[in-house]
Image (cartoon, rainbow, N blue to C red; front, side, top):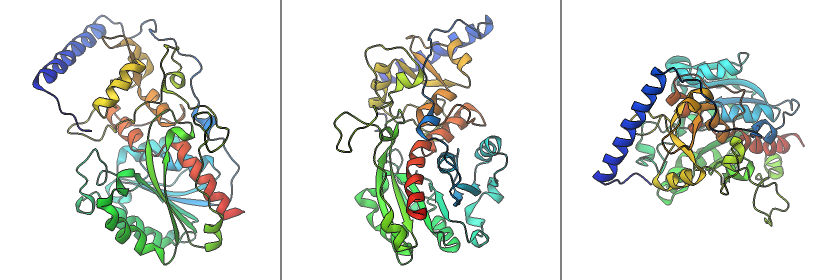
Length: 375
């Protein structure tokens, strides 16, 4: 829920912020950017273990709204080959190029604008996947839906109709399934494609697939051939509480354990990470609500003032002694492996992380799509 603070609370937060800035300046002036680590880290989660690299399956993917590469990475590790990525933001294109220099990355206001793109040359690609901007439907925004200029569903549908892939995958916030958007979904997603595709619609929770974060998203998966659709099964959880209806599951990956922090008697999956691109100003925090702040506090993890490196995070501890996160820590909580680097300033890196599909969730969907198309 949005913040609703009293003036007294605002004054207290301002005072804390001022003290924090003063402490940071003092530390830097004293040359203490390298300090003995306050938090000993061991046994950190490797998200690659959640999505073992598979051999090539002979299927190709075209990626729209690629962002920081969550869908692209998940599908790659599931054995899909990359055809091209379209992304409007230059900094996201820099991230994709830095991590996969052999990929065809089309980014920026000219090459990456899907509204200007002709997709017919990609006819023959097996999969189109992407997450059209979610802000028009997010409960954290104004939910303007079709009236929001960031609504890009028409362009996604246009791409599918031009490319005619064997299957498509689209991801978005669960707010898209609110009753107020029922007619939008029907008229703008289902109706234009239902004559040519059998469409599945389902929700997935990231923590059910080993990601140490509470994040739920909706997926639309469509198959051109009815025989492929008949073989498709919605991904079932791999991680969960003991006694799940899905059978034996691995225990959930919790935030402190995944970050390599010692046991304090409390651990839980982290709250949903906020994107650094959202809100009234660019932010270097991942806090998205007052309720989330209580969980972060219990975890003894500080969700604000994320630093570009682990060393700087250690050099600048918060007043309460909690664990200050780096960009790499936030990426881990989103399910990105440590070797996947994000370009840009901290807020830009957090924007890419917070807007991405969690790669292990993308991987789970990719596995089921591959099985439907290849068995």
